[in-house]
Amino acid sequence: MSDALRIRKGSFGRVALLDMDRSLVRHAHPHCHVLLKVDGADTGFVVDGTYAPLTEESAVLVNAWVPHVYVHRPEMPRTLILALYIEPDWLANFRANWAASGTPGFFHSTTGSITPGIRKRALDLAASMVHAPLSTEAHEQMLGDLMIAVIERFCEWRSVGASLRDAARRQSVDYRVRKAIRRIQGLDGAPCCIETLAESSGMSRANFFRVFEASTGVTPGVFQNMLRLELAVDATANGDASFAKISDRFGFSTPAHFTRFFRDHTGVPPSRFRQIVRLGTDLND
Image (cartoon, rainbow, N blue to C red; front, side, top):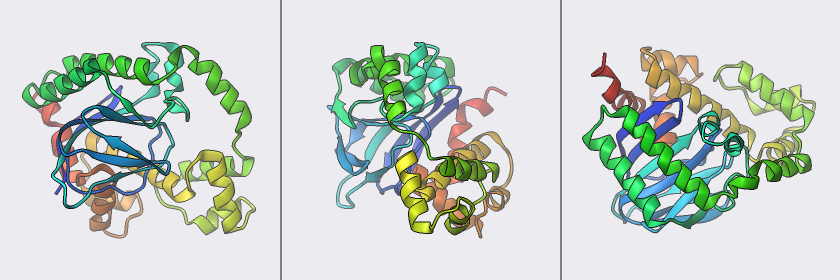
């Protein structure tokens, strides 16, 4: 069974040290996502339909809103992965145009060869999270140094603002999709059936799927699950509500269904996530 050894959550987003031996479902995130192998078997992700290997020499880079799947072969040993989910506003503290990390196209490739410096920073951060779990300020400093190295290696960051403005001019979100997104967001994580969204948008189900994915890069179902997951992560990490109450809030028929949804998207059940994410904070109270 996959496990989370350490999780840090803050203004930077979240960082997870995951010990993985099972695949994850197709999902997406509203922020850029960097994956680095720490130890174990070589593995990989399918990012927007393309296989991206994760090895000691290569990282996996996932832009915001891009669907991806973790693929673990059952016959292979476990893989220890440092997974970074980074908030655009936090990156903007380093360079203003790095706020563009929250839009598609920030990384120019789904995978790339890492430098010895990037690998050392990743290993140092992972080791510090395990051996010095209370050193949260040091972890954020190390994360900043790691992300600077990653962005300078894999992103044309000097011109990212201009290139993304050009991309935005070429791609606009259909007004009917914007209406559907507002409706989804207004539900605060509760599910809405696709037929209802399509009907309220004035489209057939098939046409709604096509227009929604063309506008956002993901299907309506993946988009809804992305919002539900981020809200569920926040409720699990920062609140004290029971998982039965969280399950009911987000429209799951049973707590077991919520647990499976959470585990299939993050790699660990919500109870384990809450335990690990609070490892460094409870001791400081």
